[in-house]
Image (tube, rainbow, N blue to C red; front, side):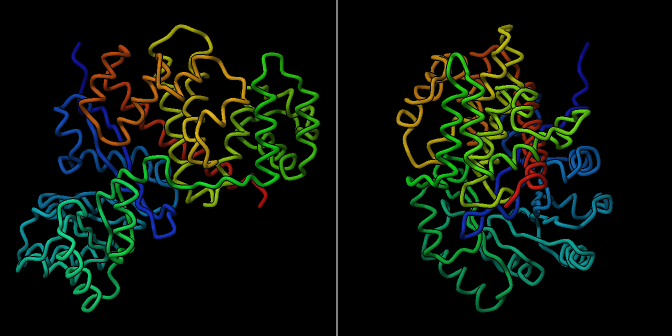
Length: 420
């Protein structure tokens, strides 16, 4: 039986950050596992059906929380009535660089702006036609890799002079050097693979809260976990105890009776869930608030994506849980500002997890590489890894979409149930 291609929607997203490296928006990336990979990478080929599916079926809150969302729209979409089906709140319509600018398009965009949509110009290079779009634009995106610095400086200078309310966004910020260059060029916002890599939040001096969390994590990863010892360590920090009780009593667990003691909480959720919660708390204590934390975002998406994919490739009972833990720990070096070997030497983990984290060996390592390939749009590598793991591209892209929704749900839950 041939599967119905029209029934599948696969969603990716890339964060857009401000100068403080806080996530302020996401660009949605539309993918289909059945088409050619060049088309998967190109979100511009997204159809009206995909847009409607994402906004009306999946739900924008499930994938972006309260953040703004950038979506690419083509000439055809601008001229159609499809956008009437999408509410304008927090939506930024990204006008593609190949859009033919004429009076009809200007009128349509002006009308959309009046209805409450924000407009962005993608890959902006000034020309006689597209400078007319600056009058309706809220954001201008400049490709940092393909625009010479002197031209970039001129574009920014001209926009600042004539349209001071426009936000200027640097696209394709691929590494730390590019980010520093974009800052010097006076961009307001930043987007690129640099932010999908673990180089965002680093510090080497642990505060007492982090030290206690790491101490608990070490105990939980011992072969014979002494829960009494875990409890004793936990009770040294009132904040940890309070947040754990709030979390365990939240809708996430749905226990019939309210849990009032740390002993009861630990016995009810078990060591695996407690371990995951400790890692969440470590990420939550990073310098960005939970809602704006790109490291927490990435760790949660990776962990869930790897867990779901793991269920497709192994009958080993604990393998999905191992995959989840590997994903959560994969950014621990960026979080704590130390190399992985130094952090993991005192934490007793299975040999497979350590090999995956340090050398990206074995099936867990392949899963981690798969997550990284999706994040950096390395599609040839992704196809190769799918073959190695024996999973379909459809399964991996579905797992990524589920990971995105899971990350938003967990963040919302943590914001409701954490003390400040």
